[in-house]
Amino acid sequence: MKLLFKPAMTVAALSIGLAHASEITVVNFGGANGNAQKAAYVEPFEKSTGNKIVTVEYNGEMAKLKAMVEAKKVSWDLVEVESGEVGRACEEGLLEKLDIAKFGKKSDFMPEAIHECGLGAFAWSTVLGYNADKLKTVPKSWADFWDVKKIPGKRGMRKGARYNVEFALMADGVPTKDVYKVLSTKEGIDRAFKKLDEIKGNIQWWEAGAQPPQFLVAGDVVMTTVYNGRVDAAQREGKNLQVIWTGGIYDLDYWVIPKGSKNKDIAEKFIAFASAPDTQYSYATKIAYGPVNVHAFKKMDGKMLANLPTSTANLKDQVQANLKFWTDHGEELEQRFAAWSAR
Image (tube, rainbow, N blue to C red; front, side):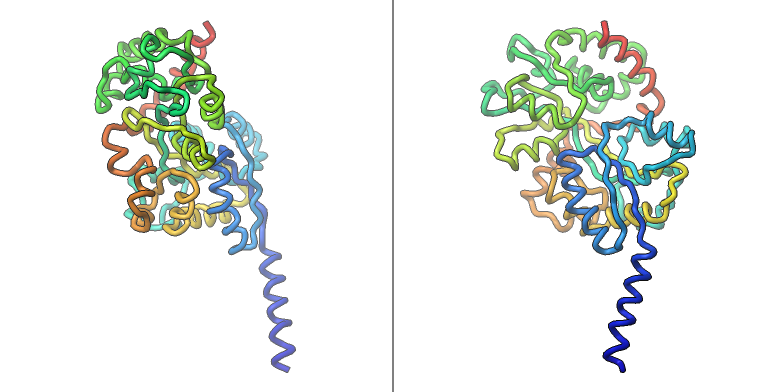
């Protein structure tokens, strides 16, 4: 009787579990990052919980999220956003407030990973990248990036104000520690745009993270601003792309839950799963983005740390993206940039 009863109970329990399984939509930036998330987060979470994850790729279009929330027709359950967006979206009431206790202790995470409306997903850097097979004069700084006489050719830059104004000031001689101090003045902003004027005719704009490595491999540009993880992915494919950490801007992407998500509880469980030390370590083995859970670093050797933007050596002359600055000034700067680039 026991032998017959036990399998019946197992089937019944499995049926109950599946009955409670849900489908949630997780939105990220795709590419190498999306692939790493799929292997480290999505597939293991589906296997351990029975929930189905539908992943959607986007380029950071917050207008779509805003339209969903305002129309009360929210189809996204969890979204990866850049730091400049989390503050603004939170202030506009577009995001659910999060309880950090559901994901761990505050001391488990980098201090900047914790926000009332989001939790850091990973740390990354926008850096100067080049193709070592094609460029013989190795750039050392943003001043070299701006020097079209020393290193002729096109430069790739993301189409937007963010980071470009910081790079422009560094190219103009502002030390990394003073970038946001200078940028917080009208004169500093004018100075950044004046510096951008100098290379405007040499810029090839990019809008998706996959484009800069493609530009470098094809020889369309001699240097480009690029996400360090995209260079890491290209290196894993055998491409001789290199980065200059000096003057890079390190930042965090955040997990946020749109206001009105019908699957908030499962989205929170996914954040907790993706924020655990073992899971964060697994993610970092697949792409060179830094964990936000400090315990994940204990599992890493020197070779792995050397490729992460938040290792001690790579951080020493980088700038931390200023979330408050971009929350306060991002909209006006992006408008100014759009008008400037259209001229």
